[in-house]
Image (cartoon, helix red, strand yellow):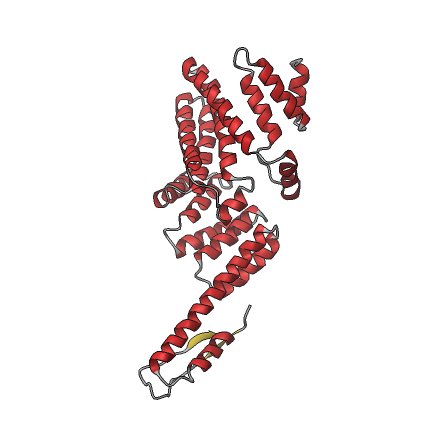
Length: 335
């Protein structure tokens, strides 16, 4: 980081219209002033200083890019150091605080620091949709504060209704709440919230997720579309049993078939088992993998008449990928 110092400049040149109060300068800025001050024309001076300011802004923004690149390359400690340096020079950067919150929450579990930085980002930019969404998710999963989480997530959606990240976080929150309602024997409400969750996951799928930003890259290293498809498959399969309990067998059958379709699409996008295993080992990151997807699809297939052979094939594939549930099911079902 460049050193800083206070310098008091007074313009005593022929262009008396330009005056300076005490200003906070760093050395590079002071150097720019010295060079620009050699100019005799007032407009030339202003143009020169404007260019210097622009270059300084670009340099500062480049430092945030360096922090993002460090995180992308698997160096969260380096990214944290770089964003700290960036924020020392640019204390009013909402994006800087959001980025630091992301690292603190997802890489170092500094949960209080993360929450403080989410709130700082929002204080600096009250239209920062991603900050509201991530704070809302934090409030729900880490602090079990549903009312505050609900408020933040809805605010985020109101600002940016087409954001894949925000729609995913809303879907995740709604489905978890649906499970809570089911456990309280509120089955109709659970079904409603589960369907709402599906609708938000489908918004994720309807978006172009081919060029994710650094937030999506960090939270969904395997791809947000892939994870959304797997989640829809999971919810639809759960919905199948719930609908059977509610005596709607026709709709239940639809959900079961749709679950298989979603799992199949997720399998088509899935990275190799080696990649997901490495991610889990290196980053302690629990995510959908091929073994789970084949096992879950096989489980869904097993509930359809005349689909047992397909189910066994999925269990066999999952077993080969090291899934222990599939190993047990394959053995006990005598596939």
